[in-house]
Image (cartoon, rainbow, N blue to C red; front, side, top):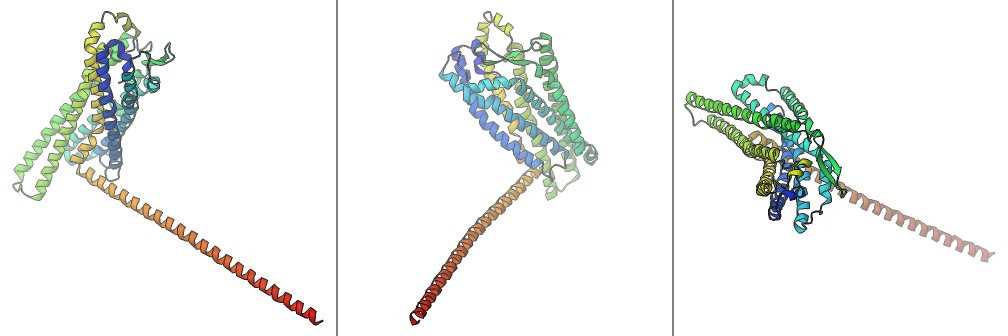
Length: 419
């Protein structure tokens, strides 16, 4: 996730490196930026809708709300670490193949990678098990019906979310001690393995023995079994209703069947999207662990001459696959809104109500602003008229005083001549 283009120059030929950079610029750069910005908007909208008082009384919506929050945070970090970075640094590498060429923003990313990458991994792990939790929550609703309301409460969902979050933080905690930042001979920040990260046993435990079962195997198996039995329950419930109700053309029956079909399609779509976007991550993780695609171990440079031909053969395919996997992660974090609108009737109604409410508030504020501006203009005009009237009155009074003085002077002059 944190591999940069210049870090793998020694492992790729110049032609392969240029092709990889073009793909990273188009797919990992601009295309990912568009998907990420859409994902930020969609998850932000989902947070507003799912956080509405009409929606947050259901435990399922609490899980979806938490999922939207972690996806939003992950997309924001991904935008800075990968998408926006590729749009800035790749054109410079394509224009200049000098090995000493670098970009200031790439140095900025390198400096904060030891802290950003573990945080992104924590958010990813939370989103995976939030998906498992919401699937299990739906399975309980279908299995126990009304009785599940005593189990699937908002308080219990918050407890589960808190436990998942704490466990994810503790699980990713060793990754915070894996890398360090050092300055190379050119006074540039460079990511290096710490003494803990260089330990071979530590790397096997963290990347293979713990990471693969906890991040991939366990949630994949749980989702497969939960959704398999969920679909069986939906099909059994649908057949049971068709057998007990002969009036299949009744409007209420059609509505129930439509809702059940929508729920089934939503579960299938969410699970398929999850597996399509997450399963390649497992393959990529195995490749990165075996070939150390993003490794900064200095010991690899000692054997670089003996493995250079193998690296040339594998470099392009591995790095292109890595870019594609990162792109699939952005799709998985951004596409949930599509399923919410397509299958969630309450979500659509609530979002439309919020849109109407926002529109009313905007119109009300606009009218208030127009009224305030009109009142201010009228007040200014009134003050100007009053000021003008006062000036006119003052001028008239001055003229009267002057006329009075003239008459007084004339009278005094006439009296003097008579004497």
